[in-house]
Length: 133
Image: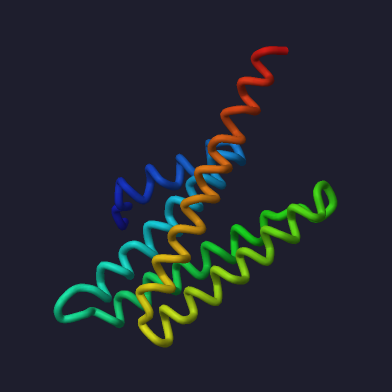
């Protein structure tokens, strides 16, 4: 019988028991965390490019998951704008993977962090609006 990592168990329970908005925020957090790790690994001496690229592959998968959450039927213009932004972030991550471009990774991190703050604020405002009704 194998023992499960307690942190993995905690994260699994957290991911399966939170509402969709919180899950989206967790995905942003994990994705930006992987980008930040990659930046630090590229900037370390000696740079650990293999591990940094591994982090960027995980970040790439996170952005792809964010893109899959878009609902083009509800607000098609917003969904298309976010889709285009996610494609741009994927391009920036690709530059980080292939060319070790920290500036591109910092830009991707900033874009996703700004989006995360926006979603968090929108979720809080929605809860306040519901409470006022």
